[in-house]
Amino acid sequence: MKRYISKDQVNFLIALSLPFLTLIIQRELWSFINPFVWFLFYPAVFFSARIGGLKAGIISTFFSALIVWYFFLPPELSFRLVNTNGLFSIVIFVLMGILFSDAQARLKKANLKTSEALIDSRESHVKISQLYEKTLQAEKLKTHF
Image 1: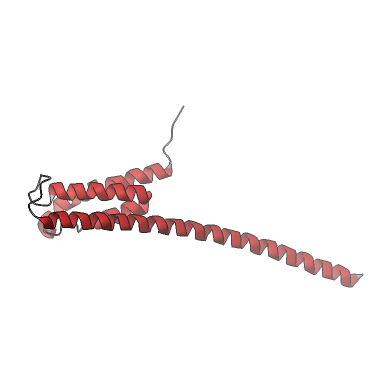
Image 2 (image 1 turned 90 degrees about the vertical axis):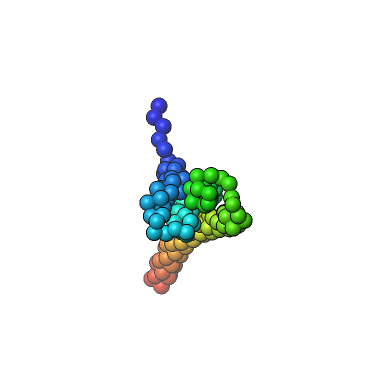
């Protein structure tokens, strides 16, 4: 029995990989963007939520926060914090990531409802047009007799 991965599962995995891809890119660009530790991780979380949904966005937010904390906040390669600014920036980033994820989930839901309403509207238009044609035919028959 073959088991296939759904499109949603693939999107979820892609979304979860973005923080790690961002880590690689940021390590390469670190000499140019230092001290802006969150610079590339905000878009990573935004697109994780866009691609993978609310859950993937929130998980990516926490992965990103841990990555930045460990690799980029002083002292590097440690989960220790030497000042409260680091903790403050982590908290702000996590809150923003949750807000991004929630906004993307709401946007996706609104787009789905809009699409459904448009389909319903088109179906109703077809039915009304058919009824109008039947009314015209009935009027012709009435006039004919």
